[in-house]
Length: 416
Image (cartoon, rainbow, N blue to C red; front, side, top):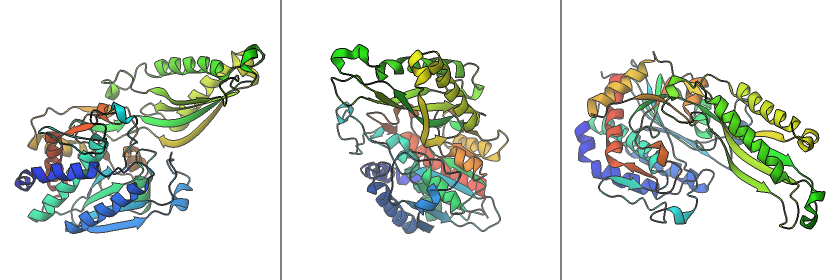
């Protein structure tokens, strides 16, 4: 089985390059068309395929829907099943197909973020690291097991999901569809380390009021930009306080639970005092903290800041929670999948694996909390490169992940 993967190493790289060339940005038509392509691929390699249209209105309207940041008129779920004999534990591999926009093209070394270029060591492009490298490794792990004819006792599932980047629509819909497993591995970029926990991330919007006037008489107005400044400072102070005594699982990060403002819009005319500033940001949730508790802390901080400012005391900032709402989550240390992934990795790699918690939200929390499926991250690539220009993934780590996932399926699902 490992020989099969070694013999097809060049084909794995070619597949990854081709998948990167498909610009499956969250919320675009291509996000759906790539699911069609992958459904055909999973059929070709011999899995039982469930490829369905997600009922968006019903799904988004559910009480525990995790949120979304882009509009979709349609979306599709996809699960391939390599059926086992039925008397062993089942394992799911879960990979998202969507990627974030490329941003400033001039910042990319090659200018084309979707060229999927490869050299002897790395494959480049948007999504290479997050997480098409891990997805391709998963596909090839399943393909190798099928090609060699390994008689698994338990089912091996491969879920290809949309909408992970903006909330988790695809995994949520997969769980609503009824798909479950005894354990799950999400091959997000971990540099081949084992990541059984992640902090949460809540998307928020602040509406900061001002008072418009002609800019030549700015003292007659109140600048919403100026009134945002103490709010921003309060958020920075809150971030510092929330990162004191962070969980040891998060010790590798300088800021385990970041708070960042990603977008700011103010005013409608250059010669007017701006009467409204709208800021959107991302708020880190501590391990073990509920999203409700986290929201109250931020709202109280904003309210206290407003009380200390004469204008904002009478015209308080409005806090709106919208978009992706990623809870924090942690898989129990005693869950068998942790040691199983560690064994599989050690069997195919000399990399000394570490365990840590991720500072970003992910579908791990949906698998854990809604699905009741113990879940870990293990995959190729450095998460620092994700969402940035020049994103890439080491070829060696993609191949190692494919080998490890195939070995994991044999170990965890069992062989008859």
